[in-house]
Each structure stands twice: as C-alpha cells, then as structure tokens.
Image 1 (cartoon, helix red, strand yellow):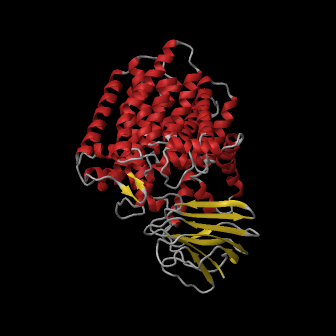
Image 2 (tube, rainbow, N blue to C red):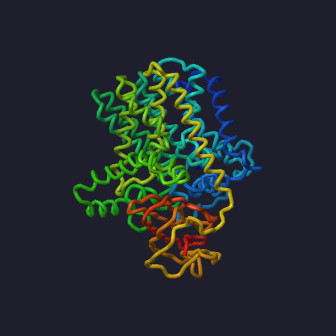
Image 3 (tube, rainbow, N blue to C red):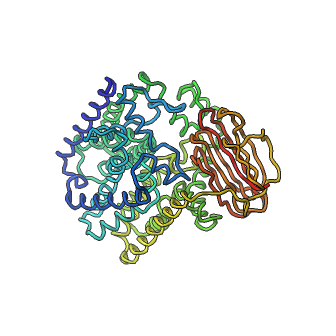
Length: 566
C-alpha cells in the first residue's frame, strides 16, 4: 500500500479499536446479549443468502450480483472494490467521470481490514461484503429484544430473520452488495443508544456519535437519517445536560469525519458529486461548489416548491407503490419496480401491518414510527427534485419500518401466530417473485415482432441504431449509435397495438435513460441501467405508447437502442 492507503488503513484500525473499547465497557444489551445464539442465527442466515445468491452458477465472480439484478441496478456494487484496489496499488481512483472521493470509504476500508487471508481483494470481496451487510440481522434482533425488554424466543428470532431476509430491500442490497445496509446497521445502533437506553454517560454519548459517523462514512445517504434524528433530539431537549450531550455528539462526529474531508478537498477534489446530484439535482459536472450552487438553486425556487416536491415524492414513493400492486401492466414490470418503491421494497404486507399497528397504543412503537416519519419527511422535502427511487435515500427508513413491524407483531397483537404465518407466506412470495425474474434474465431473448408495439411517428431521430447495426425482418432498431460511442441522442416516438418493446444498452450504461408513457402516464423509467443483451420489456397494452430515449454518454460503451415493429 502507498502512504495514503496506510494512513486510511490505520485511521480505520484506530476507529475500530476505540469503538470496540467503548462497546466492551458498555452494558448495552444490543452488544452483550445472546452472543452464541445470535452467531448461530447469523450463520444460518448467511448460508441461506449464499445459496440464494449463487446456486445457478458454477463459479464465483464479482459480476454475479450485477447479473442477478440486471433490470434494476448499475455496476455500483464493485465501486468499493475498485476503491480498495486503487489504494492497494497507490492510485487515485477514477471511473468514467466519477472520482474515488465521490463515494464514502468505509465499505472499502472494511473489505481491506477483514481480508485476513491477504488474497487478492476481488477474490474475497463478495463473501466479506455479503457477511458484513448481513450483520443487520443480529443487530435488528437485539434491537427488537431491547425494545421488548425480554429475550426473544428461537421461533421469534427465526421469524425475524426470515422477514428481514425476504424483503426486497435486503435481498437486492446484500446480494447485489450495495453498502447502504452497512450504513443502516450503524444508524440502528445510534438510534437505540440515543433514544432507547436509560444510561446517558459520556462513554455512551461518544459511542452514539461514532455510530452515526460510521453510518455516514458507509454511505452519504445516511445524512437524511442523521438530520432527522438530530431534529427529533433537539425538539426533545429539556435540560442543559441534554444540550451538552448534543454538542458532544456533534463535536465527535465532525472530528472523526475530518480526515475524509481532507481526502476529498485536498487529495482528490472536489468530492461533492453525490451531494450536488441527490440534494441539488445537479447531475452534470459543474465547476461551482456546493455553496454557490445551493444559492443559485434557492434563487430559482418559488415559494410553494418545497411542499409541491414533498407531495410529489410522497406520491412517487408510497402512493404509486401501492398502485403498482393492482395496476402493474405485467408481472415482469412489477418485479422490476419492487426495488424502487418504499412499500414494495419493505414488502407491502409488512408495510401495511406497520401502519395498522399505529392504532394500538404503545409508546415505544409510536417512537419508532415517529423516527421513520421524520426521516421520510426530511428525505422528501430536502432535495431540489422529487424523489423517484428508494436508493436516493438512506436505507435506515425501510429497515426502521421493518423493525417497527416486527416489534409490533411480537408485542402488540394477541393473535400474532396467524400474523407471523401470513407474513412468512408473503415473504416466501417475495423471494419467489424476485427469483423468477432473475432466472428469466438468462433466457435468450430473440428479436421477434410478435406482440411488439408498432412505431407510427418519431421526432429528433438522427438515424442511429445499436452497436451491431442489427437488422431483423419486420423490426425497427432505433438507437443512439451512429459511428462511435461518443454519439448522443434524445428522441421520442409514438407506437400503437402491442404489449412490449425491446431495449439494449452498451457495456457501460452511464448516461442512458429510457422513459415509457402509456396513455400519458409514465409506466417505466430506466436510468443508467445495464442491459447488454436485447431484453423484452412487457409494458402492458395501451391505446398509445410514447417512448423517449436519451443518451448523454460520450465514453466507451455508452449507447442504447430500442426495437419495435415496423
């Protein structure tokens, strides 16, 4: 490793050492109870995850997660691996127009720290990454046990484990290896220490701050959760001691975060791409810093922009999620959307159960749901654009809803056995649905005109096609590739009389967006979605279909194309 990698590595070791010391000295149940039992449950969970993840394959590669969930997710699952390898090679990571400083470092540091075998990092990356994210299971288990003020029975722990594993938000992110669940683990611990523990010592306060810090270093989306938690804590301050505790939490947090700020601003500036993207809605790279860009955006705002965007986000994430339960035009489209909408990512039955349990009076349950609600409000209101997808936020919110739902089933419902069996059934349905779609991704797709929409008119089209210049009888190939990958496009066409279209992108799908509208309502949006083999998109039957393809990618492999009937 080069000098910088040594510094980051030792900073990580010191952080882990301090945290472990504080944990050892604490009496907090979430850290000290039922270690052996939790290890057994955790091992069983890991075994089930690995079987689910790898059974169709003869060997292990880091491409497996991307291929499993090709329809929803870009190649973000290997960015932490790329960052770890760049540190080992003494290089500053650059991938496309992204920098290593644009993404939080903790997941990459964890992979390096836990690679005790000293094998090449890419050989152990998947196994270590899946294992550390699955730590969410014992953490949630002990959190629920602490809230319940009793030890959970073995059947209850098995139920909790299965419910967590079977939710799309867990399967997609542990199997895909997106480190947002890693961030959620530390936020769950921070919330438990801050709001649900009677001890208010300096040691516990520092541990709370470190948990928030590690969450933010694991993924920047935790900023939404941290801000929400801070607002709730500030609103509840009644004594000077509580105010001093808040100052100590903030001081430890910023002191711990300063080395990463140094890396972002001095070693590989500017390091603020994600902040500009997800908060300010600025996707393209611009020279302005966050401050000047924020002022510009504020000046462009109208008085009612915030409530309007908040409602749009609520509609996109929650109302539209429930609408998809009944109105998804095809089974395949429903499975694709299961990751992007909050009720579907949690699992609609558990989400609905968590809402209905609000009618049963319980102080702890109401506190959990209040934390979730404030987190949602902050997430919906803060960005300068409506929220379209769950992965634009921290996954602390869905995990908090899952935790509240499980706690409610265990403690607030007298007929909990039927409820548990019902939720297990729906959990099994979740896994079958996701697995059905994953296996169908590997079926060869042949371009055939049967049931395809027929193109009737097109605007702004300049004659592009796919990379292979595919020609098929009775089929039109409309794309962005004319002579080179640097070609761009933004065209729209209308089509009639069909159920599906075909879609394909280059090996690098960055900058590619496909929007599909049925009878004026948007029914599908794919952005930066890697689909490097022709894929049939069953969008349902509409009187008029409108399709827009945008290619802003000018680098290698950045093109896309659509196939419809002549």
